[in-house]
Amino acid sequence: MIKNSEFIEKLRISGLRPTKQRLKICEVLFNREKTFHFTINDLAKIISDRLSEKISLATIYNTVHAFKNKGYLKEISINSDKSYFDTNTTDHHHFFDEDNSELIDCDKDNIDPINIKKNITGKKINSIEVLIKVASDNQTQN
Amino acid sequence: MIKNSEFIEKLRISGLRPTKQRLKICEVLFNREKTFHFTINDLAKIISDRLSEKISLATIYNTVHAFKNKGYLKEISINSDKSYFDTNTTDHHHFFDEDNSELIDCDKDNIDPINIKKNITGKKINSIEVLIKVASDNQTQN
DNA sequence: AAACTATATTATAATTATTCTAAACTGTTG
DNA sequence: CAACAGTTTAGAATAATTATAATATAGTTT
Ligand SMILES: [Mn+2]
Ligand SMILES: [Mn+2]
Ligand SMILES: [Zn+2]
Ligand SMILES: [Zn+2]
Image 1: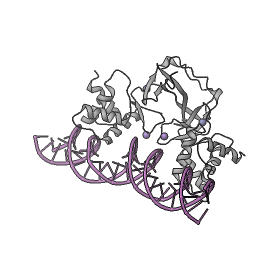
Image 2 (image 1 turned 90 degrees about the vertical axis):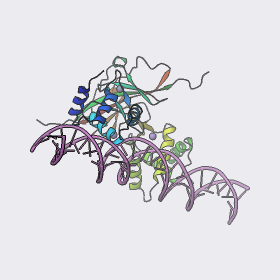
Image 3 (image 1 turned 180 degrees about the horizontal axis):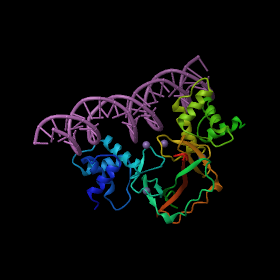
Image 4 (image 1 turned 60 degrees about the horizontal axis):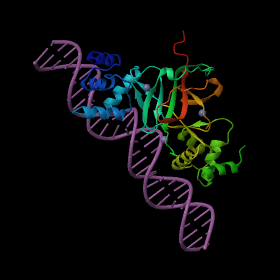
């Protein structure tokens, strides 16, 4: 159980005041054991299911983006119509289950370190991400 | 210079008749030496710049998706608001230049083959893609 | 605690990418 | 030429996201 003061600290560093709505968002995002992969819509739904009152989408978008900009959340590249976010902000790779559009962390030791032998001249590498798309095996069960 | 008959063949296999508009799209897409990475908007702009008359967005979307479904184009995963397509349909990785939102192919021998040691149970791997985000090096020129 | 000020929340409008629809158009066949 | 099947197109519909601006709240000062 993470304490409220941690949420307040994250909010403060992100330049946001600790309001009731933002603390509720923090609780959903950061008060968990495991990595949480979500879309804005997922998050909004969880909040509205768990809460009596709803938090407006604008507030959710603003807060999530502020956290992302400060590195408390990561945005994940998937070819889809919506953005995915990730509470695991370390460098890591993903499986994407195309059957249910679910993101799953890939253990660090499940892939050997990626070594880029030659980078684009004059640029620095900001991130290296592997995305492994998987789907059900049962195409034609013979 | 690729011949018209190749375009017609690609269209036929994609289940599309060779109309004037579709052949023009083919010419922009496939009559080139190098890989072409583009958004629908890029493509529409190139066509309208090069053509006297415009091709409607609906036709461009339909044709590009038909080609994608038959494997003549690939859709690339980037975290952005729009979809990127790629005329290089082989398995390959990308640099993404965040300065100008440009995709660049990564030479096959620039990265060692990715070996996934343990896959999700019951799923088969459809693709493994590496995305290397790069940006200008000159943050603070000291 | 009341007043004051800066900031936050929210409903709603605007924007953008994409998909859908239905009417006009084209090319082919009898 | 008339009928038909498939195509193009403009524009409407949808969905994610961002912007706006009026109202509400939090933090500070008296
Ligand atoms: Mn798509
Ligand atoms: Mn975004
Ligand atoms: Zn993750
Ligand atoms: Zn490519």
